[in-house]
Image (cartoon, rainbow, N blue to C red; front, side, top):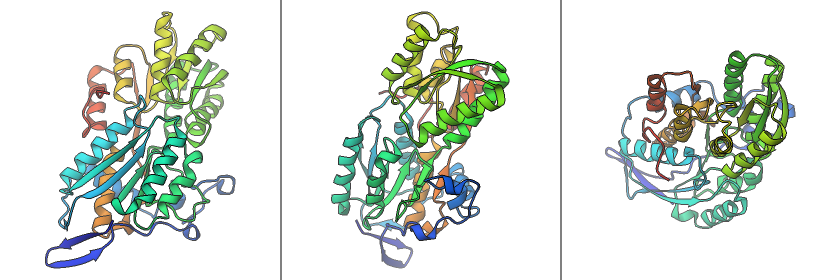
Amino acid sequence: MKQIIKYGLLAAAMSVCAPAFAADKLPLKELEGIADRDHWLPGEVNKDGALEALQNATAETAKPFTGSLEKPLQIALIYPSADTSDFWARNYLAMTKRLEELKIPFETTEFASRQIEHSLQGTYASQVDQDADQYDFVIFGPSELAIQGDNIEKLAKNDDLTTFVWAFHTPLKYFEKQPAVWFDFSSAYGALKICDYMVERLGKDVTYAMNRGIPGITDNQRSGDFKDCVAEKGNWNVVYEHYGEYQREGGFEGTQLILQSYPEATVIHNANTAMSMGSVEAQKAVGKEKEIFSTGWGGTGLELEAIRAGELDATPMRMGDDVGAATAEAIKAHLEGREGELPLVFLGRITVAHDKMSVEEIDNLEKEAFRFSGVGALER
C-alpha cells in the first residue's frame, strides 16, 4: 500500500517500503565462527552505532511524527499470540501505545496461532503476501525460524510490504533479501546471564534436567548455550532433556517424567513461560515445588507472579516492552525516510529476576520492563 507523506509545505509521494539488506551486502564485518553458522550475528550485520541509537530512541520520551498520512497505516501481525506467553500481547500493546505517542495513525490485523501451528502460520503468510496491497507493514513472529524461513523471505521480497521479524535476532544467510529489521532479545545472552547466576548461587556439580522447546536456533541458545555454560563453569550434569514444544502441557509432562524417573535432579531449566508454568503445576501436584529449583524464561507477568508466590526461583527477564516500542520507532523512521539509520537487528535488555529479590526490587523491574503494557499478568 502506497502512502502520501507530507512534511510542512513539502508534499512527496513515497512508499513506506524500504530497501532491505540484499545477500551480497552482508556481512558488514566478520566475527569468529562465521563460517560455521547458517545465520548472521547482530555484530556482523549492524552498522556501528545503529543499535544503540534505536535503543536510545526507544528509552527516551516519544518525539511525535511531524508528517501526515492520507489514511492510517495498515499493519498485519502474524504471530503465536494464542500461546501462554504474554510476550506477544505485551509487545503488541507496547507498539500500539508508542505509535499513539508518536502521533502515527494506524490499524492492525492480527493472524494468531499457537507456537506449534507451523502450517497455519504458512497459510497466514501466503494470505498477507497475496493481499499485500492492503498492508503497509507486516510483523512476523515465527513459530520456529528454520520452519518459517521461506515464508519470511517471501514477505521480505514483496515490494509492497515492509517486513519486520519479532522474537528472532539471527538473520538467515540464505535469504536473498532480508526483512527490514529483526527485533528480539538475545537468547544466547539470556542463557549466559541465568547460567552465571545459578552457578554462583547453587555451586558446582549440580544434577539437573531441562524442558527444551522446539529444535532450532532459539532452543539451541536458550537450552543448548545454558547447558554448555553450566558444564564449563560449574561441572553440572544434565540427566534428562525433554522437548516440550514450548507448550504448558509439554512442561507438565516433562516435569512428571523428571520427578518420577530422575529424582536426583534438583534443578529444572525451562525454555519459555508456558513450559515453566506447566512445570510448576506438575511440581505442585506432588508437593515438590519447594524442593526443585525451577527457572522460567523471559520474565513475563505470569513468571513474576510465580516468583512472588515462591513457585518459580529465577528467570532471565527481558525488559519486555523494548521490542514493541522499538518497532514503533522503526515505523516512524521508515515514514520519515530514515530507514538507512536502523540496525538490521535490534536487541532489548535482559537481567535476572529471582526469589531472593525484595518485592520492591521486582516491582521496579516490572515497571520498567512493562512501562507500556502494564504490570501484572495480562488477562487472556
